[in-house]
Amino acid sequence: MRTREAFDCAPGLRLSAHERLSELQFDQLGQRLDRIEALIERMERRLWLTVYGVVAVILAQAVQGFLAVGP
Image (cartoon, rainbow, N blue to C red; front, side, top):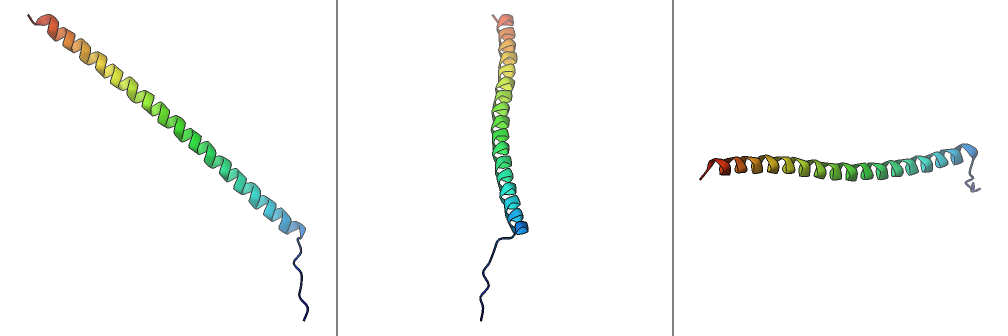
């Protein structure tokens, strides 16, 4: 019996190259999404810090108003 040797043909090589390229593109996309998520988390922290700052200023003004009315 004869055994056939596997050989690489042009369409098969092109398909494997396309699969490698797609895998690299998905890896890059995942890395970009991770960076975007990190940026969004930082922006969210800054937003909450701003909100807490505004609330603190409003409360401080309210307390000053009560102290001005008091004895």
